[in-house]
Image 1: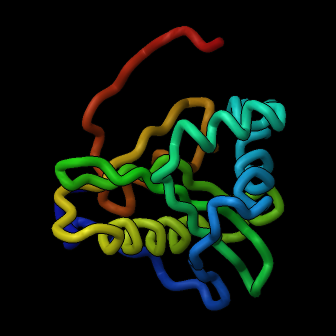
Image 2: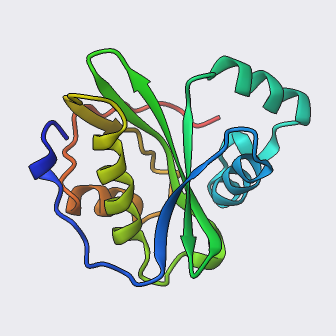
Length: 156
């Protein structure tokens, strides 16, 4: 997405919010594991030592918690790149909130925040995989993202 007006917002969902989350909060790990486990994400099996190394590798990553009626429902993590570009590094809902009609508005909130994280953002981007939730790519496309590159590789 290369312009804010490319975002096609989903209908709002009352009670769904996106709030800053301290990078040292235990929710950062908890939410990533809960989001990723059903899809085989590597984060789901990291040890405490691996999480410590991971945090050190990404010192500038910022985290925002998706909440529904004040309950942790998901996570958005952003990497700020030169250019200036913002990568949505992680986006997702925990399993108990999947299938409840929250994904479109959750992504809308996540993309709006991405445009506000650094001055003069020129591009917002993310990666997805066939191993992600089946609704991920359709949601990204409905919100206005377009495919930039497709890579095929063997799954580990």
